[in-house]
Image (tube, rainbow, N blue to C red):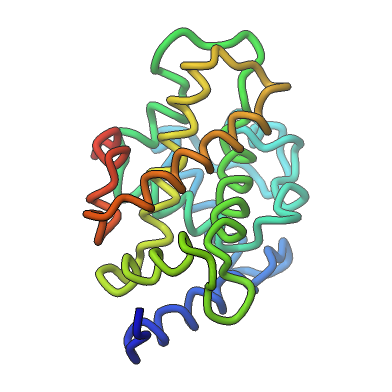
Length: 208
């Protein structure tokens, strides 16, 4: 694929987003965290930055900033994008409304961070121009849609939940489910007639 100026610029912007670590002392990052809470729980009052209430959303402790390690700020942006663009799917996953659930479920917010990190690795985005087949194909999606990474995140999250239910998985199986999600996503991205995220078969799982 010949990389045009538009794709080059979008790739550069995406790489810059991937390089921003989450900073719990940064006001913009604190605001984004609060925005996510408002989108997730419109009728509940906002918790403080450190509160046991964050665990409801699937953060591991009372301070969400400690969960970002590998994902960076982009993973929070991905979750906000998901909540805004596909609110019905976001709420169904947040509240684990589909299928028969495990007694020990995956933590929603932390799962999102892991998915962002998995996508960045899978698409080979850290190293110059992607050289893997799946990374090169992603550039075509980026050409069609500036927010292709964020849209792909939503598809991957929905796909992961479907895999979770199909495998009757429990918390300890999360890494295996993430691996099989990556495999399925790579398979779908390799399909010839996929020129945008909306062409992926799993895109049909998403509900607005």
